[in-house]
Length: 278
Image 1 (spheres, rainbow, N blue to C red):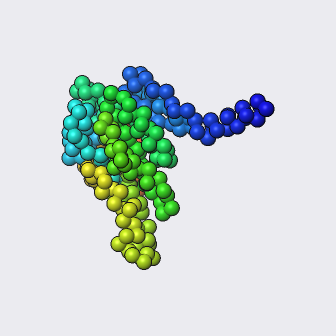
Image 2: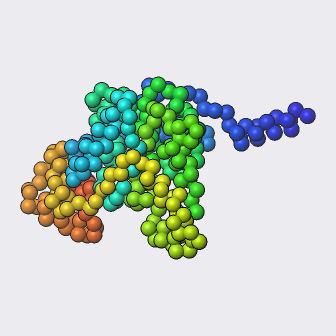
Image 3: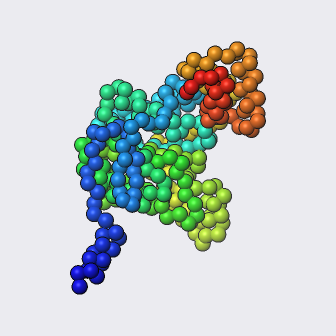
């Protein structure tokens, strides 16, 4: 009789695993949340760029830095949605701001949450709620499709339900979409709904729950070239100014786009050709 009982017990444990042990938050300043099983894995070295190399986003930079510094000091702060053009430094800014706050001597942990793991966010918040540390919960490239129910889990972070959002957690997300879902999908649901005003209100209003909206727009050619100059200076790559300008403009023309990401990709190619490690 013991074998069937043990098998049933094992199956129940797999369906409802025991709560994870409290992690050692002193192990690192950055963590990645994983599920199955639930765990927070420390990140020894965060992949980020210095804030001085982020060009053309001064207002967003200053606003997000001030909000994050307030939070790190135990003062009120807003959840933030960084939305807009691809490759313009949204996720880079979040990581750079975290580094700047740490450099100022304010202890702050950053925890990265993948969009597909949003249904587990309640369990994550319970883990973070029990710590004395302060956490910046970060979700990159956040968006939702027509039949995606993950947005309901996000409300646990933004509204907090009956318990409220943990006082020691603030949530930052990046997205290419201001309302976190495609505009054509919004219009389609409105046109086919019996009550158009209510058809997509629940999803569209999700972005309204962020206290800060920071918009990122395509950069100008001068800003694009300034980014590349900054990378060259920071990494010691010496190139004739006119040659650099000509090659950089040709690179962005072949890509059909101009952004911080394209500037970095050009610089990586340039550094490689000049034998410089980055």
